[in-house]
Image (tube, rainbow, N blue to C red):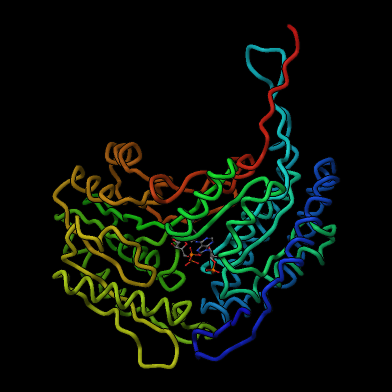
Length: 451
Ligand code: NAP
């Protein structure tokens, strides 16, 4: 049994039954059956379906956005934007599908590379962008000729059901995409099942280790999109007003619960005071309130457990000698917390290495670019990064020196359908989106003929 609790009120919204073992088995069998035909379906038919799904998503933005707001607390405004981005991703793969899957000549040989599907792919997904995380798996899966099975996060089963309904309403054939309402202890056995060809996980480091272990045992392809504690580096040549303004947005987006939120602000000593003053004021002014109210910049955290985790991390920080401004639970029946900033967190402390999944920033002062890069890289994660400089030489050093899958320059980092998204180190491996995400779960086949 799954229970959806509205984190803005603590009220139960709905309960959902867990699938029985027989129901899971029937869904896997249906996926296998669908793959037998979908793998040979012309690309033009696959892209036409993706286009219809985009239209269907656009038509359902309002009810779907409300469901996400109610289940995990994101603001309605941001939920609508998330759904628009989902439609854009379906359109990206629809419009570029033929080109992305075209055989590619092999230089120096009489032959070419063909891109062929692998089979049913299992996706294990998180609640924080409950549509977008799933869609950036589903759209390339359908285009590739694979079929998809989703194990969504326990707290967003209403969203999971709506995704499935919407894809079916667009005319997806039976078994092409199915929601599996199962708990995480059922994931390992599914990965071990020979009929599952690969697994994609977006989630925490702990889930990543367990999914990767199961995939390793089964010798199965796995893509891992895990946590991050992205650096946001500000150098003296930057536009400090703009950097401080964007830093606040980059930290409080999704109530601070994005893998690529800027979580560690690393600021050159020359501009530290100017930046810190504006940034801290912005963080303290960020308005947390009813996610359905258009004036709220943040809703509650996704659950009361999540609030407890963040408050625990802040206690840990204070005990280690860090100073906290803001970051207090708000007097309300919801799981609300105000924006906050930690200073004095030792670079080598356990907390500096952790991901804080709430609107709390860590602020570090550095003497020069070498120290900025050293502090940025001093953690196990390597997902995104944002650097603020108008010096081309510094820009090049950041691109080459920062250990992360993505670097945004003079802007906050955001995912987009066209660009590869993913990390290195403990942030995972493999990429989603763009051509790279499409090719992760494909058989890249060399076809060779005599010269
Ligand atoms: P989570 O607890 O790891 O859950 C993610 C998914 O994995 C859920 O469906 C969860 O199921 C399942 N799961 C948890 N433990 C598992 C296990 N041992 N074996 C198999 N499945 C397991 O993460 P979350 O709290 O939902 O999401 C937040 C995390 O995701 C953060 O660390 C964030 O940075 C990361 N994230 C990364 C990206 C990226 O692209 N790199 C994007 C978004 C989020 P249950 O819900 O049933 O437990």
